[in-house]
Image (cartoon, rainbow, N blue to C red; front, side, top):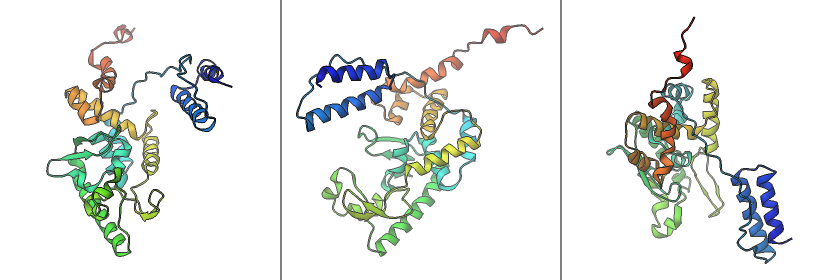
Length: 278
């Protein structure tokens, strides 16, 4: 089979299989890799594929009362992390990878390093999280001291920073704010390190909290970030400022949150509510 058969197969996925665009792209990438790297047969431009349509969906957003309800079913470390997702607009990965040096209590800012698209950005440090973060950093310091006493204490650094700054991996400033409870083997360097907390741990707890709060929404950790943006817009903040806080490359990405507000902000009253009750 050659390029024409592959094109027919990928088009079939979209037309008959009704797969998502991401699923079709994954199949395309896998086949291109197989043919190019294994079979030594370049498939060419593949211009005749019927592409699966990427649906345009509005984000799921919590009301302020719903945010409070979910947080009320969280406690301790998980409540602190969820408060950062909502209060600073962090992605789940941003929160987990947060390092001590990137929390600025003086300026009340958080610096997100190498976020989505490998871009740094600055965002808010909510007042309500400051005391909890200070206590958590204190616990992380204790864990680091224990690791050092036991002959460990190094942390993973991005982009080969360990070669540029040879001692940084052992310095306190580079510790994760939310370290894992146990050390583990890092397959990238074949050494024992303490990584950050698993994202799945927070996802499970937040899902359970949403269920316990009896919210009929298909929501999760990322819903806090959507709610952060939407509530800032409700408060009248400039969309460009929100774009910077979220780290969006284009304001078009941020504008999706304006669609969530359109109905309620335009003051449209349903005709059903204007009917006279008899």
